[in-house]
Each structure stands twice: as structure tokens, then as C-alpha cells.
Length: 129
Image (cartoon, rainbow, N blue to C red):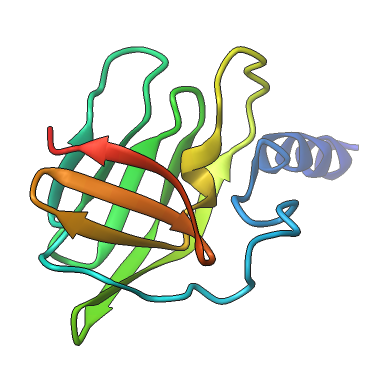
């Protein structure tokens, strides 16, 4: 009986996390690199409540929030291109929050602006924090 209880508890805990791309049919399965003029390393957006932000770390990891759900994943850059993903995000329902940021597959940097893409489509921007 105890092992059944543990299994149910584990299933409940794990059901709160999903791949950011699991239900986004318009996003390509593999990240597409987009040309970038500089490194994304640093913090983008703000950490104010209900606002999107992302931190690109020099070790190739990226973490952040879409304003409701936290996400984490990897990024890689080569020959002026920055691919993002795969990303894993929590799956909290937040009806008043636009969760566009967890759909990113690539980014490009221009000055203090990080352009965020899902496939070939630009889905938003973040300002250097």
C-alpha cells in the first residue's frame, strides 16, 4: 500500500512539469539557429512579478520565467548563431499571463535587445536587465 501511495505522489509531483514544446505544434522540433551579432550571456527582462525574464549563463544554460512558469534549458552558439533548447517548464495555469517566452527556439542580440524566435517567427523581445 505504501509503494502505491509513493507512486501516486510521484506522478502528481511530476505532472506539474512539461516540456515547453510538448503542445506547441507550430514550433519546429529542433531549435533553428538565428544569426546574432553578440553573445546572449546576461540577464534579459526584469524579475518583477508576472513579467518575462531569461538569464543566459556562460556555461550554456538558460533559466527564467514567462511571468508565471519557471523554465530551464540549454543554449549554444556557433558562427554567430544562437540556438535555444530544449526547454523544460513548469505548467501552472495562469490565465492572465502570456506564456510566449517558453516557446523560444532561438534568439538574436542587437545592442540591449534580445529578439526571441519560435522557429522562423519572432515572438517577442526582452531588454538587457
